[in-house]
Amino acid sequence: MTAATAPLPRVVVLDYGSGNLRSAQRAVARAGAEVTVTDDLDAAAAADGLVVPGVGAFAACMAGIEALRAGPVIAERVAAGRPVLGICVGMQVLFEYGEEHGVVTKGLGLLPGGVTGLAAERVPHMGWNTVAPPPGSRLFAGLPADARFYFVHSYAPTDVAGLAAAGALPTTAEHGGRFVAAVERGPLSAAQFHPEKSAEAGRVLLHNWLATL
Amino acid sequence: MTVAVRVIPCLDVDAGRVVKGVNFVDLRDAGDPVELAAAYDEAGADELTFLDVTASSDDRGTMLDVVRRTAETVFIPLTVGGGVRKVADVDVLLRAGADKVGVNTAAIARPELIAEIAERFGRQVLVLSLDVRRTPAGTETDSGFEVTTHGGRRGTGMDAVGWAARAAELGAGEILLNSMDADGTKSGFDLELIGAVRRVVDVPVVASGGAGAVAHFPPAVAAGADAVLAASVFHFGELSVGEVKDALRGAGHPVR
Image (cartoon, rainbow over all chains, first blue to last red; front, side):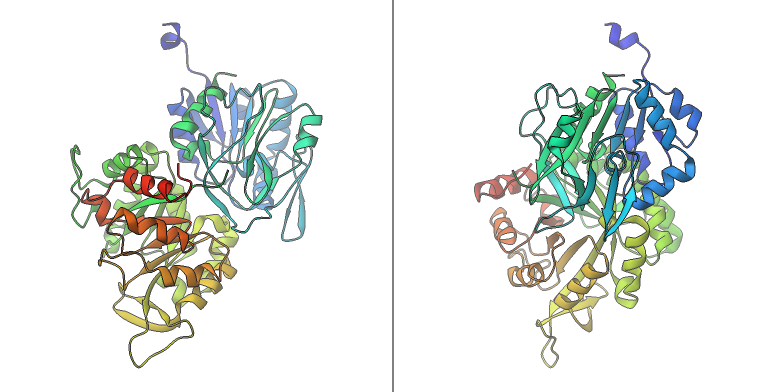
């Protein structure tokens, strides 16, 4: 039972003024980590894993990240092979740009392509949906094919081929068309849905992410 | 695959306690919203709604504590409504751990509140709640439905379908449609109302009011509801979340 005595991984949830951080903190802790919510960049750089949350507008989230000067910390972690998990708009900002109401905002550019409006009959895409992970996915290991995750968003990246060409593993979902529901590339992981709000399926996914730390 | 129809139990909370009788087995304290929320999570609820019916503003802090403790123990989305009057009220609830916030009367008085909340936090946090009835004799609206206040007792003369459309345009991310005519009857959802609102908005619609049997749920979805909400039938154990999902699944609707 070495797992019981091994120290828990240390995770920082980056607080740049966006979202329900309490849920993210508790959900990651329940999956098996010691979690701190902070805007301290040294702590964000030093943690075993960094969670970048985000809800609301792409532009507002990027403004929050830039105000904190957190972009370089996220990029340096990824370059150094140190795990980062983006959630919801925290995933979207990892891409090159976001387009909302005709306004294009530059993203962190760690993943190729942009984030655009969902072309669906019902927007926001709100509720529990299934996903299609690619072979080799670590995030979705052990989850049944009909596992559902909680989504709430009106925008998403859609360039699945571009991600694959860049060496990433894109997981897709369908809502009025195919979009990117999650991405894995080396130390960089991201989910458009909210694992912290996705009950048992979310717990398993977060546990899988913690296993990569 | 498509997004699942959500089944949402709603709890009325007064000064930190669940009101309207709750008759759940195996609960230590059936009046504790946190414990009840955990039980519904366990039972497969897709989301939870707390309606704060606290009359005294002195007890508002109690509700925040309930939200906080719920968010720490239950990992499904939580909507909190009741008494939300300004942007700062939304901020406090989101920080406490709510995922979505319901706005009702304050938006009727001042529709710009919807845009203000959506701009600040994104439209996905904002649920516009409407208490709707058919217009009484002697009055009329374009759709034949009007918005009410004071728990359905007071008419506003506002067209309910028009208001839903305007609220969605202003930035509401979801419409919680309460039929005051159907509420408490246990004779089924108001399908005509659901259909009328569905035709004018592209945001999700949550149907509420009138659920009395599992057979009532699939027609609400067929009429255009993306989610179904009920209170007493769940609280009294008359129906379980699982039975409702079985009925929906049997009718060909995707469920979690």
